[in-house]
Image (tube, rainbow, N blue to C red; front, side, top):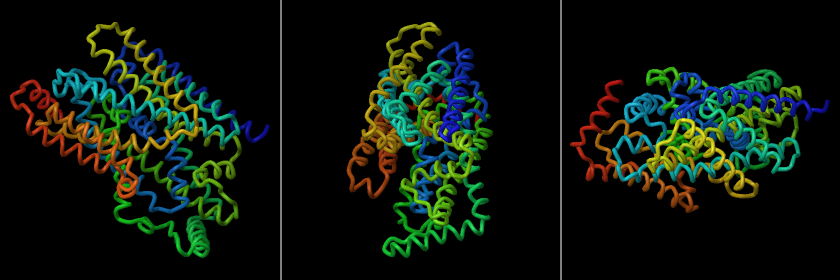
Length: 500
C-alpha cells in the first residue's frame, strides 16, 4: 500500500470512532436539558478535556508551532496568556457559574442565565446575547469548515470542496444526533489524540537528534545561520523576550482575557455534576493544557533545529508538525497524527454548533412563550444545529474568503462583550440588567471599531480596550440603575454564595 493509503485508513478509523460515539450518545438524549447540557451529569474529567479540546482548534497544532518555528519563544506568550486565563476561569468562574445557573431557574444557556439572574422582563439581555452568539459563531463554525477543506487539499490533494463537506458532514452527524454528550465524549477522544501527538512528536525528534544537548545545539546553529544571512533581523529562538516589545508581549498574553466570555467553553462548567467537581476539573484541564501547549511550542522550536541540520526546506512553517510526523513515523502513525489536526478542528466546530443551536431554540424561539414537549424541544435543537451548519457551509464554499481572519476577532468580541459581565454577575451583587446590557454593547462596539482600525490593532489586541470598556460602562450604569430592594435577586445571590 502507498503511504497515502495508510494515512487515509487511519483517518477513516478516526471518523468511524467519532460516529460511533455520537451513535451511543443519541440513545442517552431524551430532553433539551440532555441535548444542550448532557443533563448536568458531566464528570470533571470529561468536562475538562471537552473544554480544552473545544477551545484548542487547529491553531494549537499548526499555527503555534509555525510561529515558534519562525520567531522563537517570544511567540509563546499567547499560549502563556491562554493557560493563565484558563486557570483563572476554572478557579473563579466554574464553581460559581455551576451553582448560580442551577439556583437561577436551572438556566441551561448563557443568555437564559443572564435574563434570569437580573430578572430582565424586557427580554433585551436574552435577545442581544443570543444574537451576538448566533452571528459570531456561525462565522466561527464556517472558519473551521474552511480549515477542514484546506487540510484535505494540502494533505491529500483532494478538491477543497470535498474536504470541507466531508469534515462538515461527519461533525454535523455526531453533533446532530449525539448532542452535548456526543460532542463532549468525542472531545475527550479528540483531546487524548491531540495530547498523544503533541508529546510523541517533540520527544521522538529529540531522540533522533541525539539528545537534549544536541537538540539545543541544533537550535542555536539554526539561529546562527539565520543571523549570518539576515543581520538586520536577528533571531534568538530560545528567548522569551528577544524580538518583542513589552506592549507586544502584553497584547499577546491578553488573549487569556477572552476565556471568561467564551460560551462554548463556559457551558462545560454549567454541565458539571456539581460545583465541587470544578476543583478536579481544573487540575485535569490545566494539566492537559500545559502539556499540549508545551508540546506545540517544543515542536516548533525543535523543528527549527531538525530542519537546519537535515538541510530540508520547509515551504510553509505552519506544516512543521505535519511534516515531522511524515518523516519520523510509519504512514499509519502519521495518519493518526493527521487525524489529531482534524480532531482539533472538529471538536471546536461541534461545540460551537451546539451553542448556536441553543441560541436559536432556547434563547430566541422559546421566548415567544410556547409550551413544547421534551421530544419537540430536542427535535428543534437538532434542526437548529442543521440550520447553522448549512449556513456555515455555504459561507465556507469559497476558501479565499476572509472568514479565518474572524477567529481572533470573534474571540475578542465574545471575551469583551461577555467576560466582564460574567465575572461581575458572579461576584458583584449590584450589577444591574441595564448595566449588563450597556456593558455588553460597549465591549462589542469597541472591539468592532478597534479591530478594524489597522493603526490601533497594531498597537494592542482589541480585546484589551473592549474588556475595559465593558467593565467601566457596566459598573457606571449599574451604580445608577441597580435596585437593592429586589429581594429575589438578593436571595438567589446569597444562595449561590452559601455554596462556596
